Image (cartoon, rainbow, N blue to C red; front, side):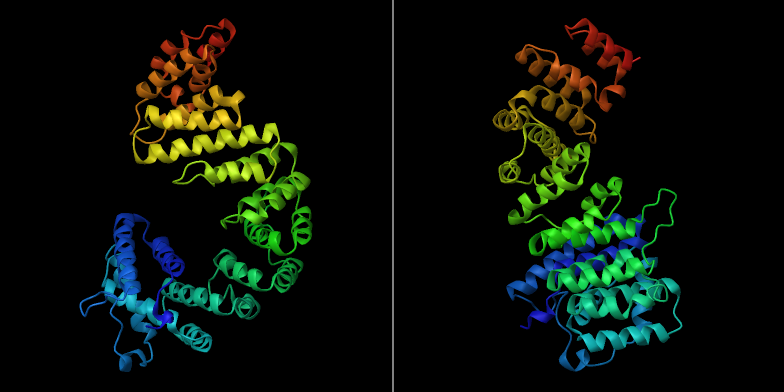
Amino acid sequence: MKSTLLLPPVIALAIAGTWLGTQRHAISSLEEQSRILEQALATRKSGTLTEASPTSAAKPEKAKEPLDWRKVAASFEDMSRGGGMGDFRNQIKFQQRVMAMSKEELISALDEIAALDLPKESREQLEQMLVMPLGKKDPEYVLTQYTARLEEMSLSWSSLTGTLCEWAAKDPASANAWFDRQIAAGKFDSKSLDGKSMSRLRHEGILINTLLSSNPEAAGRRLAALPEDQRKEALQQSSQALKEEDQATYAKLVRDQLTEKDQTRALAEKASSMVDEAGFVKVTEFLDRIKATPAERSACVEQAAESQLGRISDQKKVTRSDIDTMRQWVSTQAPESISTVTGKALANASGRGDKMEFSEDAELAVEYNTATGNDDVLATFLDGYSALENKEQARVLAEKITDPKRREEILKKLK
């Protein structure tokens, strides 16, 4: 079976994203479609397709028939009116067909769609579905040939950030030169009162992240060219995972280019993003690789711990075992922060969803506070947003704080 007939998950997600833009009221329906699509992809990869499979390939003679773009647009309109649900078998076949198209076929299809008298929304949807796979086949072509057509095609710069990422990975020098020409031509000038161009920052973040491996000096120059108060935000724009071999380079870039306050926040956010099903393993490795200072380590540990308990509380109630596991890790990385980290983590956990009642988290906070022999766990817990939403219970807990000054400060906030 040819690999070109496989629908890459990233494209499936991108197409689903296009649907989502017009179907925000049908999230549950789209989630069900995504589940079915994942099953279909798994079936196709395993080679166990049956005649009744939703992903059964179209017959060879039909695959050669030219697509009727008016009918394709109409089918998506029908699906939109149906709340996001439609003939999923046909949708998957269509996606497979697009992925199997050559660069030349995609360009021809885009020209054909542009010439049709279609509703604006339908045309935009089809164009984005074709430009994205074309960008994967030849990102340089898309960005150099379609730059002038962005407004005509009703495509935003943000829709092409993934294409720029593809090009930058293959030819960072050319991608950078192209982007600089667009900036010089005013394509990314800010139209907001604060002077920020989020579209430019998104592209800057992608290029900087890509350049970390191939040309860290160029990455530094790109970041330095931005206003100081926008540099951290640019680094936040890239959703690409930071490669292990680039982590030390990233930390140096952050320390060289950001303010001291933003340095700590940027590293902490990066560390927090590395928390996964395995817990804190990747975070520990990151801290060691970047040779984190005590202040950096403390901030990273705090945010990573909160992130981990947040992930757990989104799925189930946080248990004593979860807290103990987190505290054990914190004690090996930033023992001086264990009390405040515990308090903040509990406060955030009780504020996420309905799985953890404030009273349950409060009980744990009191127990850990008693064990530490100081007020840090309880005071930090009561300083969180969840306490403000449960003032009556929080005021009772505040009376347990032994330090009069600290107790008064907390009670004042809870009035």
